[in-house]
Image (tube, rainbow, N blue to C red; front, side, top):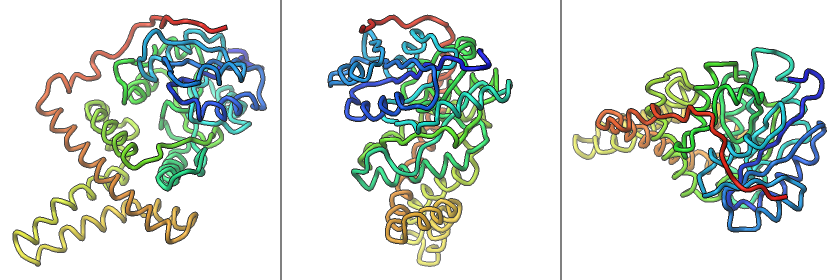
Length: 346
């Protein structure tokens, strides 16, 4: 990699996110760093995404059929010329210094091959309370992960040679491709999570969407977490995972005083309190940042989210114990280094 000013390819996977794509690409064009090539990997959008991308001077490459974010990222990487690949989801607007900071970190230490960015505490568009909840939660979690090997695929920079060596995202893992990719990455070079690389994220705007995403991602990660226990996001998360387990167990524990008498009321109450205590730092941060009223709202929503995570983990464990195909979910990872074919828009 050029130790002076490596070419950075900003790769934006996109499917029907035309409404958020404009601020995403505008932010990419306003980076303090040069040189940059801007590629939108469109996954057969039916909205105005391609027109928006062309308006901002991005090179648009299109998948042959809708295949998910992993397929789009792989396609963008296949068409990139940059020595550094910076993957930015189409609902994320980078801070002006994000690319410059990512390159500086990569050049500062040869052991670091990947820099994973974080989200701002304010969502890209402030339209619903759920977006505010999700944004503060992820902001706190990502800041907590500063300096660790925590990884998510929505915002990260990687040396192009390393991406080629590790191999592309597995397109068969629609909800968990980042966990699989992170594990393979960790076998080669160091991953660094840094708040110096930041963007504003346009989070899901309804509780239903948030819970559905949390449920599927948690359940489908279980085979990977059970095999790779040190992987970020699993049991190695410690108190955060414990808070979800306690919240989930608090609900069935409510049956104890009904079935066995009022002397059993301390059991569900203790589990509820344990769930709050294990996430106490998060709740204190939210109250300090947004006040008591929003803090109460946040606590209620986060309890529901924790119950969902706990339920998903329990179902995932049951599936892992009862289904050989579920246990082998990550055995057929995409190890080939094939290039994804598609059309290129001038």
